[in-house]
Length: 86
Image (cartoon, rainbow, N blue to C red; front, side):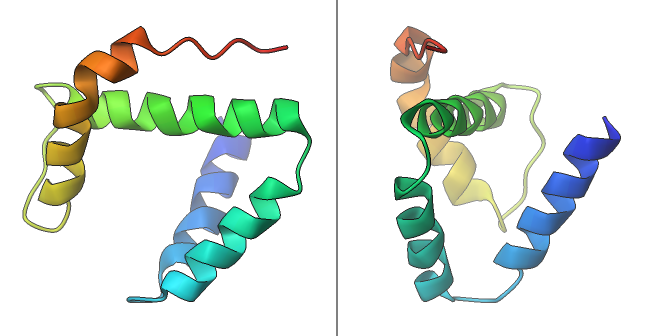
């Protein structure tokens, strides 16, 4: 659990630059160069986060309402997603 907290803190620090889409694109480009299995695991992580956002008990406010609404609109597709670890 401590390791997950450390990684979340690192990602939060990375994202804590308002409106910097260049950093996000750099992250995407770097992720592209990772091993395909790791890319699949990262996608599984993203899907798990979106599923959580779509749950009715997830509390949100105007700062992340768009994320929640997007996740809710994708809920059926997320539930169908099959992303095996190979």
